[in-house]
Length: 455
Image (cartoon, rainbow, N blue to C red; front, side):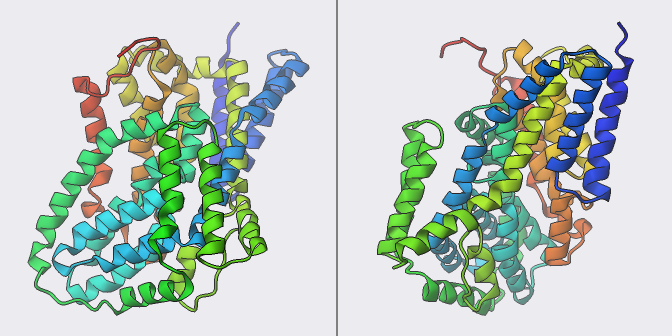
């Protein structure tokens, strides 16, 4: 039987997603839920699928979605801020800045901040603004500094367990997060090292300039006034790392780390038990009198993850119903003639994800479409799903700041008031990451481990 209707339905789904996100500015999960409904109706009335089976498929996919993990991460973020771990890391990073190494340090500090918090936007809106404020007194072009900020800030969105995008991407692809991080580091580390070298040589001519560090000192002082910046506050970070290294299952590492942070909030920051519990739900909030400090600290909470949880649930249900109806087999048939091996599969993942992300301005859409079209090929070639998530993050996450009609590009433009053409030449990781990813695929350094294969 001809399945030409599959192509029409798939085109309709893309139209619904693009219209909902770019024109109507709806939360991403709403168009996805509408798409699930469209496919369900198509399956029942056009493909004559059993209604009960379709409903069971949708319900089963929703139950498999890792929304408890997302809620736990929201609570973890709030607990880390409240116990003083995030404020201490920010203050410590700002204290070590030296003028002669300004640009490389900007990249490193923003990388650490984004990896710890999992938020590129928070890093840009806090440390990024402070660094841009300093760059004028240094005489360094703002485009260079913003390039270094973005290289570091969007580092965490690829590897941090607290990153909404990384977590949702790994969840949608049903990959192992630890494996994803290890693979990402293959291309992320050399990209960052080369970027550091480039920024070092670019910034050498500004080494003799004098800087006004009053804005940085103001942030550090305000953090010190509102938190006890004791090294003890880093215990939750150590706990999380250790529990992850010993591979405790599920959300147990996050729960244990959050509990340790609550204890420190009570004993070190002197919050009451009630004051430590409420932020886990609604997020930590403080009025420090310093706008940048407030933007650093006022975040987290399970409610902050509600939209992300709905996004993952809607992505799971849409993916399940598309697979149930075999629509993706029809859509993927042209790709099957192009994909002949692992290298061509990685290249196809780059192209499809980038095309969708640039066309819609939404990295999430690039993930969903790429996964639904190509996931079966990864299984066919016995490639770990973590290679898919690595490839996706190498292309989508890092490119978003230069997609000016997308959410990240719009945020950067609004936050700094600087056009993409000014900082794009210095946004080195946007070009290095995909190159290293394809290079490793070509030379076999990133060859996927076949299922059942031993070391």
